[in-house]
Length: 289
Image 1 (cartoon, rainbow, N blue to C red):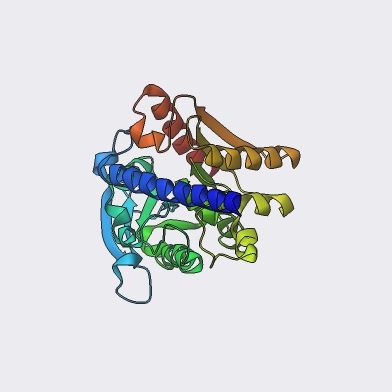
Image 2: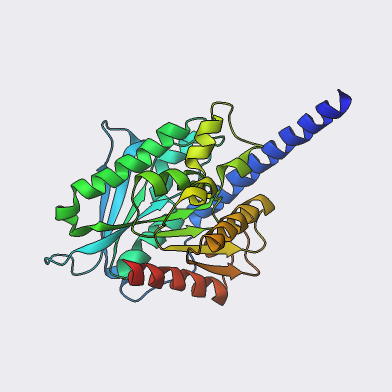
């Protein structure tokens, strides 16, 4: 019994430390743009505060970044950015974080439409299904406005970061992405076990896990993974498991590793290798969309 209490105490301690770490990381990401730029990104236009939900909630707002010269008839791919989860109140400001504002301009500067979004979230994924419904609703709004924004409805991709990977299996199974970019993603929600709410059931885990999805998939869209070698072990183990499963099934996945990168390397590890990986991800989307 004593050993059990010790183990429970350690797990609780890990959960608290991880939440504190996440809050610090998210606080930094709100103020730090990604370490990359493209010619023309300052010429993009931004449609702000598009309501994608059924009410006027600040959690259901998105910004749409349009490339320069979007006034013609040319249809362009769209890329929807999915953040990780943290404390619920931070979900109403995600699209204002510098990391997503800079990504919006980079992707639009590369000739694609970029969408950044606020959404519901909880640090322990207690509201997992509500969170996912926001992601699905934002995609539905992009499709609804495809004519207005000159978007090719068959070429909608997702750029997922960090704990946003907890929705990977559901996105793959239900939202028909034309391509995916995953940066320092948790590819398997089961690896989040030490923090998950009891409201997240075994069936939920199976449904949302990217690793579980790929085990039974007969095909997957083009996927680019950006991995930080010095990231948290449980995140990198989930990426490695996903890659091993993809290799077994002869699925091609592009993966670039930053040997010196830590979590959120795209904003925090400001070196040439970071620029190379972000640039490779942008080119990957352009080639596959």
